[in-house]
Length: 92
Ligand code: HEC
Image (cartoon, rainbow, N blue to C red):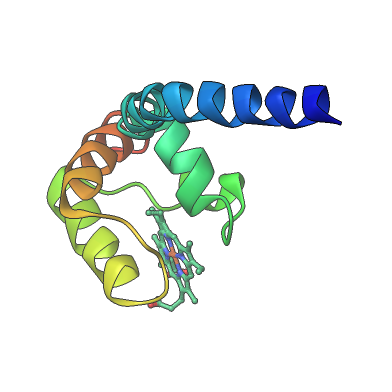
């Protein structure tokens, strides 16, 4: 029994040490345009839709802030990264 408890303590301590690292990775991953797009936008939209919706960067910023005001949770930083990604891949 004592052994089981100390195993649990070790496991909890180990995950506490690893957590900050996980957050860092999450952040760098999030600020990648492609994965942001797939993570945030493709939740509600299908990819082919974007092929018909080419726009310049300014247009994408407008769309993104509309999504941002709606139900799509993206930060201002993420909006900028997404605008670059969308303008590069779905630009005019
Ligand atoms: C929670 C669901 C949701 C998410 C997530 C979301 N959208 Fe939307 N989107 C909508 C809805 C609902 C509309 C239609 C209402 C409107 O136009 O404001 C829409 C409309 C649009 C339109 C207009 C296209 C049209 O049909 O005329 C574009 C472009 C768009 N979204 C792009 C994006 C991008 C890029 C992202 C990622 C940052 C995103 N959306 C994330 C729900 C979402």
